[in-house]
Structures are given as C-alpha cells and as structure tokens.
Length: 149
Image (tube, rainbow, N blue to C red; front, top):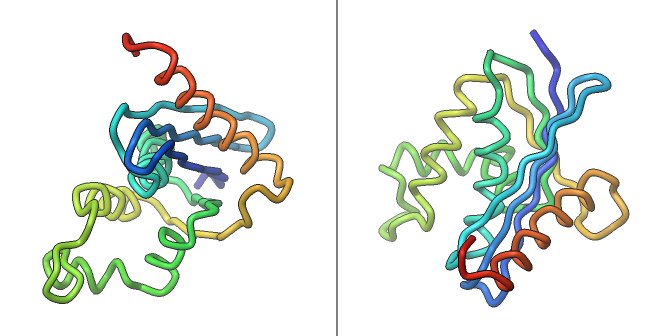
C-alpha cells in the first residue's frame, strides 16, 4: 500500500467571503499541488475542502497521513467526534452540524483509505503548510481581482 503525505490548508477573506484551499500530495519524491476556492464561503469549509480534494485525487487505496493546521478537523478524527456526529445523524446534540455535507464526504473518503490526522501549527515556517497557505490565499486574490473566476 502506498504511503502518502497530504498537506492541506484553507483560508477565507471576511469569513464568510471569498475563500481558497490548497493541498500538496507527496509520495516519495513525487509531489502534486491542488488548489481552488469559492466566492462566498467560510474558513472551515475551505479547510474541509482541501482535505477532501486531496483524498479524492487518490486513485487507489492508500495509507495517508493528513497534515492540517485545523484543530477542528484533526480533533474531529483524533478525538472521535466524527463518529458521534455520524451516529447522531450528522448533528451536534440537538443542533445540525455545520458543513454536514463536507463532513459526510470526508468521512466517506476516510473509509476508503487508512488515514491518520496530524496537527501542525499554522504560519510557523512548516514548508508544506506554508505552501498550502500560499495556494489558498493566492486563489482568494484571484477571486477578488476577477469576477470571471
């Protein structure tokens, strides 16, 4: 089984507002970058989308270590909140779970692979976290400069 590293980050201007996400997949010496965004979104949606897009790019079952500066995402899996949300119909107690559509999709993707989540401190000089942040924020600038994207 291939051992993959997936680095991700999401960003948003004005939250909600224009947002971007970036992801870097690494397998040995190979790297592939992905990025995108939305005109009206939130930071959490972009963080989730980055992980989803990275996992969707894998064509076969892999062992994946996801590195994210989002404690929300990392803790959702490491603290097993996601299992509770799923068991309760994608709710948090009596309230609907925000971004349930993305959490459901991410959960489905983690079932296809062996996934481990690792938190990295953002904006702390981590090479790949900084690259993902650059991809995400660059996309936001593109959105803000053009109405066609």
